[in-house]
Length: 155
Image (cartoon, rainbow, N blue to C red; front, side, top):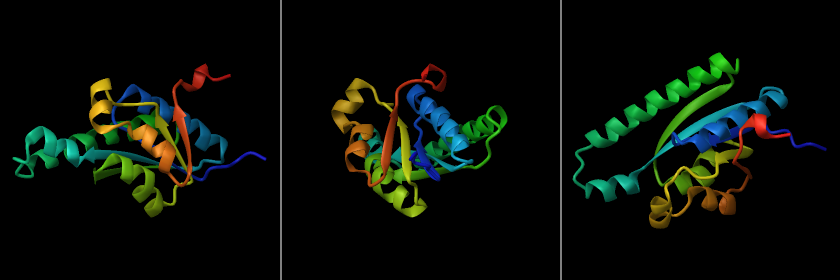
């Protein structure tokens, strides 16, 4: 029997890999009778503190949230227009991407699957912060699909 997912989480960070994950999630959602998709962008507050040495007056966080909102609005419009899919919501969270994706968001939104790109970080960022994808794969209480290829490359 095939697993039918009803509520798919797609963490997006602007990388090509996360775009592929969203493309795959839309295809799966359509096959599963228009399952719901939550698109999530997590603004890593640890990176903010590290990069700005704690000298932020809050305007940096506001600017990052604003840019994230613009990016997710563009993603939402593209999915609705190109894929004719509208059972999708966008979300922004501040904090540690690993724990928010693997535990907090899934718990709060009752997601039954996480579809995410192989990695949106550079080699140096992975060395410093660790791979979010690896952490989520190991710790999430729901199924995790790591997307590496486009939908049209799957046979």
